[in-house]
Amino acid sequence: MLSCMYFELSRSGDSNPITINHNLRTASHRNFPRWLKTIIEYTETAHFDPMTFIISIQLEDSILVAADRRHTTVKEDGTYTHRDDQESKIYAWKRGIITGSGETTVIDRAIEFFIKLSDSKIETLPKCLTASRLLRELEVDHYQVKTTKLLYSDYTATGVQCYTIEPDGYGTYQVKACAKNEILLWLFDPNVDNII
Image (cartoon, rainbow, N blue to C red; front, side):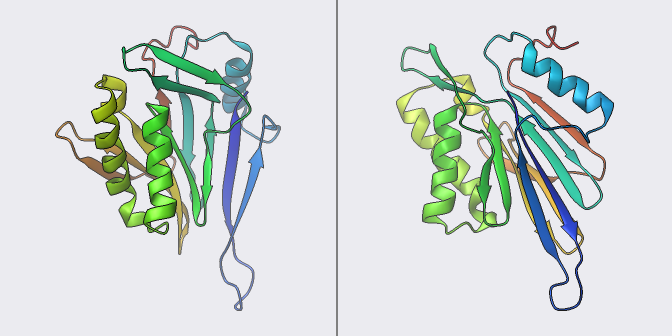
């Protein structure tokens, strides 16, 4: 089952010119385009090997984000533990959402650092991800820890904007704003035979 979150910008008069409406939808995708419904419906019924599936669409003044509910943790011996449950991978923060692909401990700690230590100052999120990854690398050395990345939203004067934080290959992260009408599809397992 996927968790879906849709954010849109609405203008409602001079006293409150911009409000953000966000609706958490769990597999209620009746109004989505047919091609997106097909992807979501297939991922809900198909059997996948352990992997991440996140799709994000940057619209003009809103975004659509959907993610699977599988959580993967790397054990010290390099093997994986997987958890499939009703816990969403899409985390809400005071100005949007955060989700990620990679190792669960790195993602969870980065979000915890962001909310508790940096008081949700968005400019600190890449540093929180770096600190979380470095701490996790002391516990386990694995490519899934090194390749963990985040996707987050924030609102601007023109609407909700989606951003990615991805490793640059040199131990630091690059923040990139998604372009209008950009579609991101993150699959941790690069084998896409099950959905093509």
